Amino acid sequence: MSLSPIKIGDTLPSFIVKNERGEEVDVKEITAEKGAVFFTIPKVDTGGCTTQACGFRDIYPDFSGDNFEVYCLSADQPSAALKWQLAQREFPYPLLSDPDRTLIEALGAKGDTGKTTRGHFVFAPGGKLMDVQLPVTPKDSPTLALAFVQKYNSEQKSAL
Image (cartoon, rainbow, N blue to C red; front, side):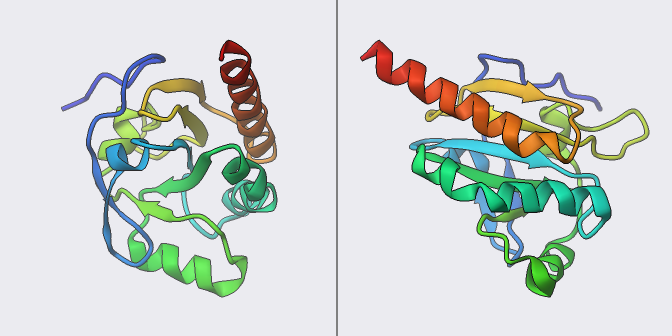
């Protein structure tokens, strides 16, 4: 059964996924206090996915300084994500596993062939979807997401 994807302005509902250590994570709780950027990758430890993940790693402090957290989301099992994390990457953000592609489908990132489409999704604090880039290139995804977060934060500050 196909779900309608979350749209800009919608609030992220509760979805349980697992992190790279196999611990359950409710994505709604993630966005309760802080903003979140979820970037979707087709498969861990592949060329394009590594490029995208390393891009987010390299500018990660800019996101956390702006009250946003970053999360990698794939359909891989937690054990594969952990192996990728430990191999050489040292990503400073959690790797979320959604093998049934429930959250991936809700975000609209489940492609016609059933594979995950590369993209990213920016949620404001409180869980409101603010930006979607789908599909996006691995190289551009991190900088586009950061530019959106910085613009969003600038607009929030000037509204005060």
